[in-house]
Length: 161
Image (cartoon, rainbow, N blue to C red; front, side, top):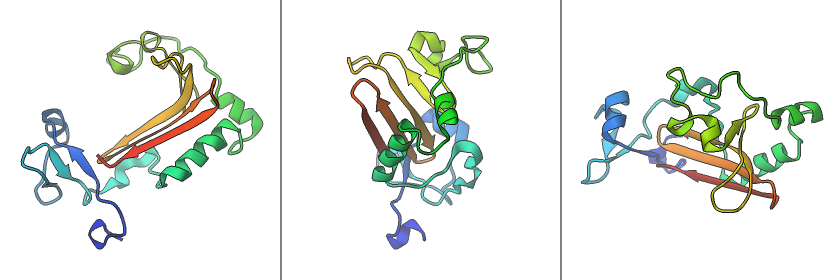
């Protein structure tokens, strides 16, 4: 089904200068939806190129269930679940081919530790303690699922911009 039939939500992306420089803009695929020229509808884009980005489609309730299932080690064997949550320091603290690291610095500087498919954040900056989770970003969508370990709370969020 397509977004015009009302079966799926449309998705949008900010057409910032950086986005336009790296991704480009086609009036045949994208359309501007506001007078500010910064918001474009990207519903017609082909997202099949995501490949290993996951590309799972789920509602927010399912995302919370997914987070709980990972936390409770129900999706994987006990051994694999434990492995997923185990941090092993990299040979180098820097990430990225250019050495820029996460958020422009090293993982140690951001308080993040990448485990097996999830990230452990040691300090959230707002007193809620460490969290485990992952962010997902693709054209027109972003989502996140986090488990706040000290409070045993799973938080999920999703946007279509």
